[in-house]
Length: 390
Image 1 (cartoon, rainbow, N blue to C red):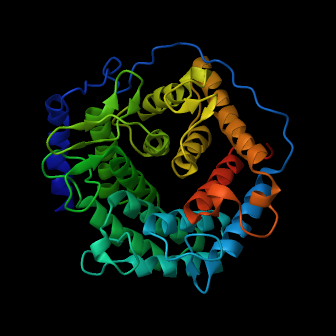
Image 2 (cartoon, rainbow, N blue to C red):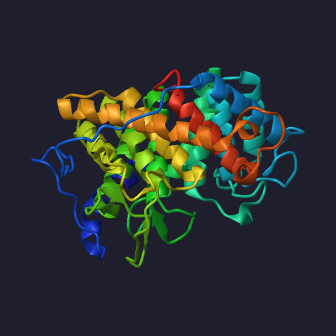
């Protein structure tokens, strides 16, 4: 049944873009399915001399996340106190714990995450034990990332079974009118982030289970997003479209990051399109060809809130680690993306100070929130993938 849905809406995705006002078809390069880059050179990105070990910083913030936000077998939505967090917060915190690789912490975090599962639908509700709070597919995709990585790190069939069950639920959320993945269950808005995160969930699971339904679904999600929500002016992605054809042209950095993470994985597992060139083009446009002046920048740095930008940082890390350059242009780009990731994380480190990073006690300001601090932990993890020091 799921495979039939994918086939049906793959066909729909190719015609729906033309019906959406203001969206133009992507410019493909000589039939190779890769967008055309508008520049042929990359400006070098400079970094400061390193001052700290990347893994030490990640370990510090990971420990602090657990010590200050985990209490009585549950997460708190603010440091040491607060109420029950929404599932988005819990998923971001859960993946941060997965990255740390501690089996005991992973087990506790996953057990708590499961309290959000709605047994009737198989999805995970925004509120704990509260289906009426709504089920959002971008949230559930991030829950699926937690379960998949927990299964891999802990070598747990139970977690992978849960991940597959949730993946089946997500794959049923293809919008019957427009294609793409509906943002909220039974809703009328198709978001780029819900579609892209669902695709990333599928390819991550495919890497462990090799179910071709997952591979095909991941391809469907990324192709639909390019066909329907691609901004041909800057090479990035619009926020979404409603079933009446109205486009939300807002753009956030997490869409680029999730797309990069998906494209470089597809590059390894599928040859039906030039996923590599698509990733190269997106990475180049995201950093403004090294000029650091794309839609996402303000005063030379990524301006989105950390709960969005951490997924861009992970996308940068995936691009550098999982792919490799094929030309001199690409060699310059890979170096620039790596340096830009190191530069952004160093900027965070310099801004935050020891009270947020290493000293015990609650972090100050916005990082007193579980979502923000867990996103910060993931950000510091991202740089460990590409550099030993920053």
